[in-house]
Length: 167
Ligand SMILES: [Zn+2]
Image (cartoon, rainbow, N blue to C red; front, side):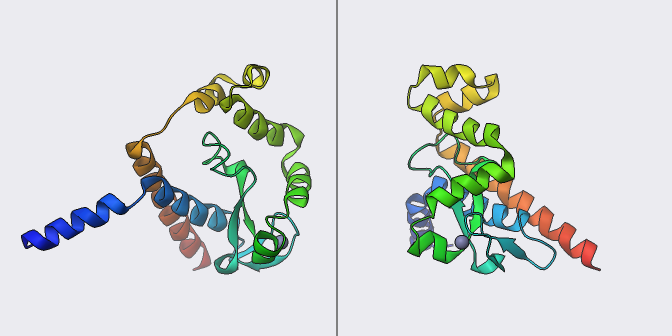
């Protein structure tokens, strides 16, 4: 490796955002986990059935709004491009259908983790010890690097299992 290629590799590495990378892998993982044996997924907010390749991964509570729930399975679901773009996330239906899918308690848990993170004491007190820690945690680049590798490994593992069971 020449000095200049080494330096340009360093530059590329510096520009990469570990958090964005981790979220991107988590999105792929969630879509795959929610897909059936034909790689079809159901849009969380309208129920349309589409191929996982054409689906978006939609957050109930966005990572901009809350970091404590950004890697919660309950918070991310396959969504069709129509709901994501044209209906701007189809928020009302998203919540309604999420409640029938998970039950109100699991949806409230996500909302309370977000609120606790913003300093809401009443919300904080309702959380389990583990969720309180999540609400208080700040994350650095190595945390996101770890999460990316974790979801990458789980994605590869679940793809292998799929291949094995289709033989
Ligand atoms: Zn939809």
